[in-house]
Amino acid sequence: MVSFASTFPSLVSLVPSLSSITNASRYPPQPGMICCKFGPELNSEDRCFRRRDVLHSIGAAVGMDLIARSSSFIEVANAADLIQRRQRSEFQSKIKGILYEAIKGNPDIVPSILSLALNDIMTYDKATKSGGPNGSIRFSSEISRPENKGLAAALSLLEESKKEIDSDSKGGPISYADLIQLAAQSAVKSTFLASAIRKCGGNVEKGSLLYSAYGSNGQWGLFDRQFGRSDAQEPDPEGRVPQWDKASVQEMKDKFKAVGFGPRQLAVMSAFIGPDQDATEALLASDPEVLPWVQKYQRSRETVSRTDYEVDLITTLTKLSCLGQQINYEAYSYPVQKIDVTKLKL
Image 1 (cartoon, rainbow, N blue to C red):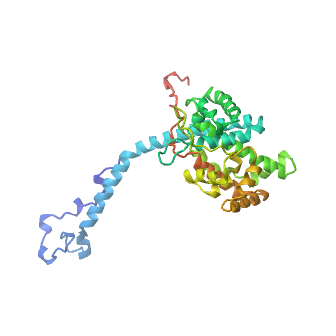
Image 2 (image 1 turned 30 degrees about the vertical axis):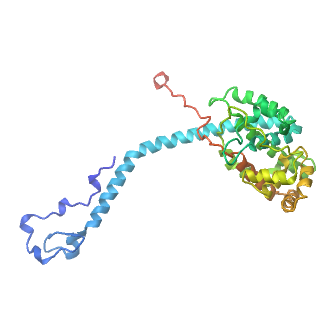
Image 3 (image 1 turned 90 degrees about the vertical axis):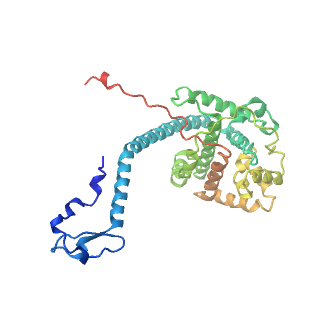
């Protein structure tokens, strides 16, 4: 512990004896200064030190004392935070691995997973800040709505994956809200990788190397941190999500605008709107506001890196996937088992 007194200037040794104090009036004090007569061997600069220097010393002492007192608490808090981060990261890695294998075994279900995630998101109501990616689409009364037609198989696949994920989870079961959005991430990654493989003439090894070299894995950091969504306890209200296959471009624009997004984000999310991305983009291209963005992303997908398309898609999905959600950054963490040292055999 830092001693409070040890940080003061050494004043005691500078205090003169009574016999040495003579002619004090020859050295009138200046404002803001503390003056003493120390003897003929000291000059005028040695005799005086400013009151503010004393106050600075006191301030430094108090600060150091507080730091010393709080350092042990900070160290414990930082250690606990690091443990929680590692626990959440390990759990998320496990989830991604299970979802990757599930989607790999059912590649045709990718469009449905993307639509499932988008429709869960689009129940968000900006005025009331209700709805959004809260897993409410899992309820039978919501998944059976017209806008969710054909998505039940994707939900069933995720429910099977959830059983495996939860089977040995130390931090509790994953929420459907997190599960659905992480599944969308895995589905998007699978389409990015498939595109790289196609660019390499179908060679999986070369395609994987291409995606590793030019892909967008590094862009997912913020998405991964938004991990800890809570599940809704009842279906979201009806009428908030369009039937995408029957909606006009204007209706799509209006819906995206209602949740805070524009033509650019509508264009980049084309793969999430209906099972046929090409057909969706052809429809979107009929609108003069959306057309430039459709063309931009089509050109980007023809490049080796696909940077504009992939980065904008990841950015948009990240923002959409936490609309109206209060992320619990301690979710899925758990107390570390303490070791009883008395039972150790050395």
